[in-house]
Length: 224
Image (cartoon, rainbow, N blue to C red; front, side):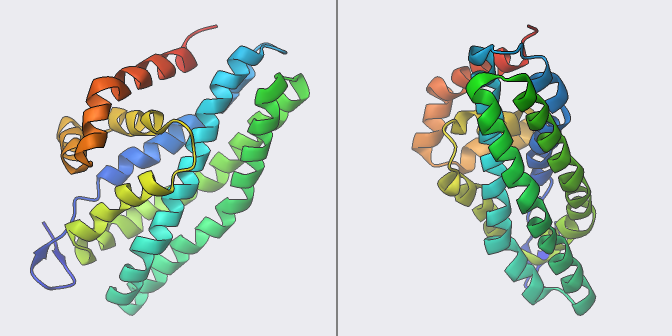
């Protein structure tokens, strides 16, 4: 393990961020199929798929907010000049994502109400456009920023991100987000996630949350 800020404190395992990024890549990468295969006027299906995208997009908002508040300022302070410039440059890309993100949210909201063919095309185009802007940012963050976070943050500082995400998430299906992240994790990462969750939340996930997630995502991914 690396040391945070040269103080002899073990640094975090930042590989869990890859699972979070996978959620966004998967959702945006399958938009043409999931949205495009909903028949015109089939509002039961558009509501289901629209709910999936609404929650993922709201999670992206919370995720970027957490990085802006909890990660970027610390790295900018602790990294060398050149490294800090990289951190700030990659973080500034969140501003470039904001417009396409808002467009996607509005397009999905309009489409899920009536599954109108025109709205279907708009929703697909907006989600694909968001993916086109987001993908290079995720790539750069993984390649250039995550190693710096592992070297300059403590495990406790890095571990504040999930809690912030849960508290600031404005969607209506937190189990969906937790389940999608857990799908992309290793067994060890899944165990650590539960170990660091507040006990009531971890108990609720085991009792009903996981089953609710599997039922919901199974319907989303089902063949029409």
